[in-house]
Amino acid sequence: MTTYLCSLCGLGAPVATASWRCPRCQGPWDLGFTADPVPAAELPGRVNSLWRYREALPLTAPTVSLGEGRTPLVPLTAHVSAKLDYLMPTLSFKDRGAVMLAELARTLAPRRVIADSSGNAGTSVAAYCARAGLPCTVYVPEGTSAKKCEQIRAHGARLETVPGDRETTAEAARAAAGTPGTFYASHVYNPYFLHGTKTYVYELWEDLGGTLPDTLVLPVGNGTLLLGAALAVGELYEHGLITRRPTLTAVQAEAAAPLAAAFHAGADDLLDDGPAIGPTLAEGIAIPRPPRARAILRAVRESGGTFLTVPEDRVRAAQRDLAARGLFVEATGVACWAAAGDRTEGTAVVPLCGAGAKTGLV
Image (cartoon, one colour):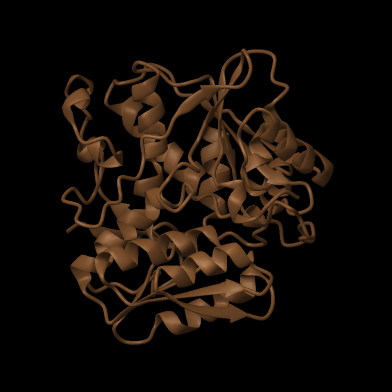
């Protein structure tokens, strides 16, 4: 098994014994893992799930897979296509990372698994823990969609509803994470999650015949999909499997845009006096202080990309527009379409991250 490396101070620690974050500076872990090239010619004969890219994954012998990955790519306009990542076992893209966390937890054999979430990550972790036979507790903020809570309970997980917002919920889970025998399946702090979400880009690369679009448009709260995408782009480029890197366009809700504010201010980290976080329909990306902020800002800048923000009326209109095209997506999942749907040059792909059935029409 490989090692963790602190993303801030560089401290190394074995995966099997490490705490959920760096004990020296409290930074999130990266993974001391080097992907091998994925052989495109061999892919047609492989399993039809994200595990087909086994050379690129730090875990390669799955026992808890539910067939996640390999979601459709459909054109929306002459310039923008959508990857239907809500067509996953638990109806969200979080399955890409949750299966990696559950597989890792299975090998470590903890007494219990805990997770915190605004809904989708929690449902994914609950489902894959059920598949792995692991006891699971999921912390969610009050006001979480009743349908997401029902889904978590249906998988046999214990649900802990925390009074307050998403950040308060995360703090409650982190307080429990140090309990002996506990595996914290954090989609934010644990880098195995990012190595699952990077398969989103490997699938695009395969489906587009060994190329990538000019721009990847990605929703950003904690940044797990964007950082996974940046990992994959780097690996594909370093292995000579693509000849150019796409730009990354990060999307936040106008009412909850701390990263966008930092980016446009030229800052390397979140602003001390950044904008207040207000209520937004795109609740899944309303994160006031993402722990991987520095890495997110760096990834977007290094790609030559930018941050865009969308107001609430455009989120609502985008959900209805996609529904009229046959795609019912939850409000967080339509943010990228709201930001990039009027694109008139180059090619771009937006992810549709969560099913509308989880939250309803806004």
